[in-house]
Amino acid sequence: MSVLSHGLVVTTYFPQDASFAHGVYRRLDVLMEALSSACERLTVLVFVWSERPYSEAERAEYERYLSRRWSTSISLRLSATKDRPRPGRRVSGLLGGMVSFARTDPASRLRNAGAAAALAAALAEGPQIVLVHRLEAMSVVLRQPRDAIRGRLYFDLDDVEHVAQFRRLLREPEWPTERVRLLHVPAVMAGEAAAIHRATATFVCSDHDRRYLERLFLTRSVRVVPNAAAIDADPPVPSAEPVVLFVGAFDFSPNAHAAGHLVGRIWPAVRRRVPDARLFVVGRCPDYIPGYAEARRDETIAFTGFVDDIRAYYARTRVVCCPIRVGAGTRVKIIEAAGVARPVVTTPLGAEGLDFADGDEIVLRRDDDAIAAACCDLLVDGGRAARIGEAAWRKARAVYDRKAVVRLLRGVFAGDGERVVA
Image (cartoon, rainbow, N blue to C red; front, side):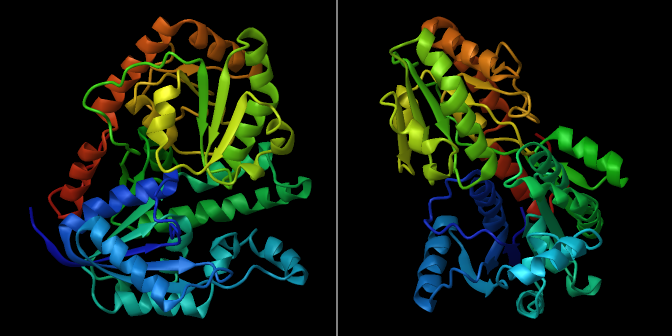
């Protein structure tokens, strides 16, 4: 396998706690592991929000951490975005986002001379391969001349952003008038189209998304890079405890809304049928969950915050519940649960793009009462829970194993092939 001398990664995601626990960071970690093995050295350009400035000492410390993590020479560069618009400029921002992708949120925060200059300086060094992580970072690339990138350009779209935005604004807006941002969706679609046609190849999570984008934008350059997790060589033993688990970062609104439904509507129904059941809600920022203040008084619910060892909680869990109602892409949390042989109860949207068979490898239900009933059935029927969990583990081992996905990506980045399949 050939090795390139220099690669460039462009992203807006800077994992402050170096944990790579959130699904977006987990995907970036897989991409970086593969790319670092194909390049002798990497420049990582991160656009960071100006509300959180980083000192030179912090930058240097994190640069050393990334070099150790990915076993290659990393040059970390940070470029601050502009601040959020002042109240008087929000109306103009809403209007601008109707006609220009660059003025949609969050691309508008990268629409500044500093971001463009930082990227131009990195590109001037002539990287042979450029990996752009997510659409907001790609918005800066689209403002560069086409001949500024002399090597191959790979674009990790991950989720189809216009679909995720449309679903969230339609079903779970942060405030009622936020739905006006639905008028930005066509501009986001235009940005995605421009990005896909600029890139050598675009990566998405599932074949479902690949087919959709190929039809929508008349392209054949979209490739499937599935989300992945480390899968045990043997399925862990089932839990004897009547424990339900939800895992997520709750400063991400789809997780917060799902957890709100779980603690406020689903869990009371579970407790009525299985009085000794317990619920673990694991992840940072639980105070973002609707109804958190009331739910934390329930002695059967434990909000743990961020934990260093999630496996300790999986070991005690019989059922993983993931009542996702908004968003797009595939959920790493479901792959992770399958990787430790835990049955998952989720919505059809929650399992979108994942290759788990309903009833055999996962349990899909549409409404809160049906989700509660399915959780109860698995809590009281340990044998069925174990069978579904083990079947899910076998599918995860075959399709979503991290080592296999990294191996496929290494071949693409090293120029040994352009085809990536789940």
